[in-house]
Structure formats: C-alpha cells, structure tokens
View 1 (cartoon, rainbow, N blue to C red):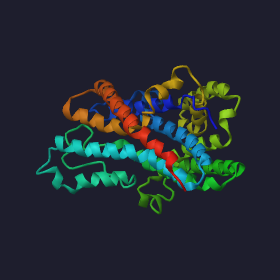
View 2: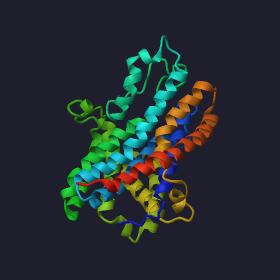
View 3: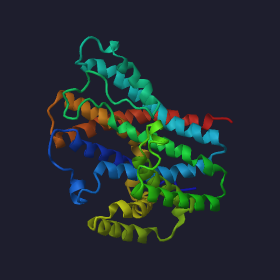
View 4: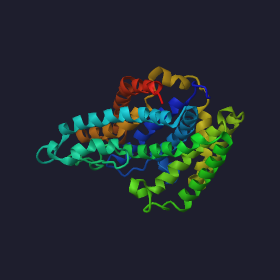
Length: 344
C-alpha cells in the first residue's frame, strides 16, 4: 500500500502538458528544433520523454492495482472504466465538431471514414487518424488526434500483467526482472524482432512496444520490490539525475534511460512536495483529459488561426485544461465510482 498523498498527480499533469508543448513544434510549419532535442543532441524529444515517464508511473501504479484486485475480472474492469468513458466522450465530441470544419466535396455524412472514425479509435488498435476534408490545409496534414496511438500500447501492457496475478511476490520480482532484461535487449538490439510475424497484425510496432514496455515493466518491478519503502530514495533522487545527464551528454540516453529514469520519476512521485502533492485533490486528476484532448484542440486552433509555436502552445494549453477539467469532474470521476460496483 502507498500513501495517496504524493506527487504522482502533479507529474502526470506535467507530462501531459509537456506533450502539448512538444506538439506545438511539430504541428506548426517551422524549422525550429524542439528545445529538448537540442539539449539532448537529438537523442529524445520532449513528447517522447514524457510518454516514457507516463509508462513508468503507469507500470508502477497498475502493478499495485493488480495485486489489490480480488480477481482478474475486477482488474480488467478497473482498467476499462479508467480508459473508455473519457475516450468515448472525446470521440463523440470530435465527430460532432468535424462537420463544422469540413471542407471536402459533398456532405461529410456521405463519407464512410467519418462514421468509422468513432469505432476504429474506440477499438484502440486499428486507429484512424484522418477523415476526408478535415484539416487538409493544416501544416501537419489531416491528422485529427495523433496522441491516441499510445493508448493501445498501454492497454497491451495492462493485459501483459495478467499473468502476474497468479505469481507470489518473489516469483513476480524474478519474472519482471527477466522481462525487463529481455525488453531492454530487444529495444536496443532487435527492435523489429517478431514485428511482421505477430505484432503488426495487431497494429503494434515492436520498436515502440519493446521501448515503452521496458519502461512500463521497470515501473512494475519497482512496485514489486516495495520501492516506496526504500530508505535511500532521496539519495537516488540526487545521484540518478546527475548520472542521466552525464550519460545523455555522452550520447547514451537510450541505454541509461531505462535504468535511471524509472528511479528518478518514482522517487519524486512518491515524495510529498508541498503544494504539488495536493494538485490532484484541488483540481482533480485531469492529466488523461489533457492528453486525449490536446492534439485535436491544437489542430482545431491551427485550422482557424495562423499561430506560431508559442501562440499555439499557450492557447492550446489553456483551452485543453478547461476540457480536461470538465472531463474529469463530469465523466472520469463519476466513471471511477463504478470500480466498486463490480461483483465477480
């Protein structure tokens, strides 16, 4: 059991906002490199960094949730009510909005890709990013909600943890450690192993699956060894960032990140920093809403206005926060109450 008073809500909100910051560079028509790419000498973008951190936190918290679940159906049900209600609403709102900005020939309702947008994206795996006649003049052509791609990888990791429900703690630790080692090798030395044979059939790219899976499993492993009780967290929170910065300067982020970043993120997440620890209580856990609304808000703004990087960044952050706030309080928070109604 971990103390509910911690920095995780702040971190998730921070990383979801940083994804919007990162997209502000790629979605506008400019030749300016994102600051994180410059600092890391091209090794990692801010959005990619944020997604990795998301998977670390998710792996840690979801493994704890698995061990608290009474059975596998309860565990799956908790994952469903966390992901799908808000996703259903953002997809429905998007479909209501698309006819207002449609610029194609005829009626948008006569295009099958308009109707398929909802159910394909709700299915998580065979995603549909475009609808004919939408965002065709935007700098980043046509894509409506490019952020949705990570959800299928996260849901895949949720399913991959099912086996650990039956393992005792010691066995879980051993298997998680071996899995982490295997994913590390695959991510760095064989990123396309079994891609065409198995995973591409589920629209999963093994390069992303092994990479994000490695971070997710790292978080789960630290949960299995009760990292929250490790007495040297503060020392690690000083030493590991220094080591990671040094490794990045030498061009080794892609190796060192798997080992150092989970320790950094979880050490800070488990801390109780004044003001930061109460963000979730004061505003709600709005990070998921920020993540799933951010991209479509940015593309919509670019559809109407000629915005630069910073204009798009600040306006989209402000608008997305409003959508995310209402998503949490009207949809997600209420849906989470269904967790306790499950009987199996």
